[in-house]
Amino acid sequence: MVMINFKESSTKTGLILLGSVIAGVFTGNSELVTVTVGESGAQIGGAIPAVAAAIIGVFDTLRKEKD
Image (cartoon, rainbow, N blue to C red; front, side, top):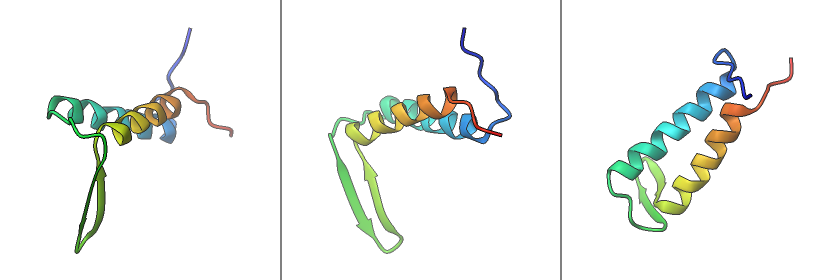
C-alpha cells in the first residue's frame, strides 16, 4: 500500500503538476508541442509536455525524501 506524505515538498510539487495536467486536458490541449516566445520569456505547452509533467508529478507525489 502506498502512503502519501503531504508534509514533503515533493508531494506538493507533484500534486501541482498533476493538477496542471488535468486542467490542460479539460481545456482541450490538442497540439503535440507549442512554444510561445514573448517579452516575459518562453512558454511551452501541448500534449507531450503535459504527459511529461504527469509522469514527474506522479513520481514526486509518491517518492520518499531523504532526511
